[in-house]
Length: 46
Picture 1 (cartoon, rainbow, N blue to C red):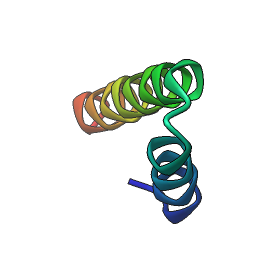
Picture 2 (tube, rainbow, N blue to C red):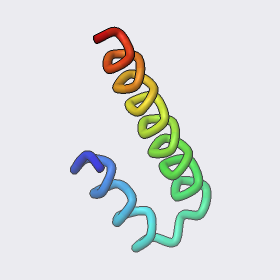
Picture 3 (tube, rainbow, N blue to C red):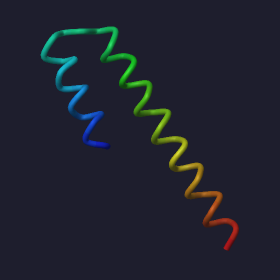
């Protein structure tokens, strides 16, 4: 997980900002799936 995302998540949990926690969680899952898709497509091209 990128450090900037960790920092924002910690801040959101500290402030109990449920909306931001949900948004950052969605960002993380989007980032992770996009990254996995890119790795799979690059390995299948070999």
